[in-house]
Image (cartoon, rainbow, N blue to C red):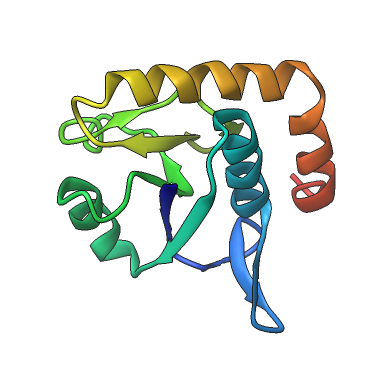
Amino acid sequence: VLKVGLEPFYSPFEYFDAGELVGFDVDLAEELGLELGVEIDFVSRSWDNLVLELHTGKIDIILSAMSIRPDREIDRNFTIPYHTMPGSDDLGIAVREGEISLLNELNNIIALIKSDGRYDILHDKWLSAD
């Protein structure tokens, strides 16, 4: 099981629609789970609590439209960008420091998803206005 932390109030990345968690990041997490061969357990938290829960091991990753910035790289690692926000920072998946094996696996999967067309399908479904 991969525990994925997110703040489900940022449409179209992650939000509730008729009580169901949906969005680009949700679908991306499901693709990660397929490639890793694990179930995804979504953990909804406030933005302010996501990093604390990552550090304490209550979640394995943060996949919540988090931009990759130097001030955030001090206490967590980021994957390669999975999306670039026009006129803004790249988005990455935050991984607890020291989790190099998981970080490398996620980097490889993101590269695969971007090269095999799945990223384009997710982008067209959720982010076509970008």
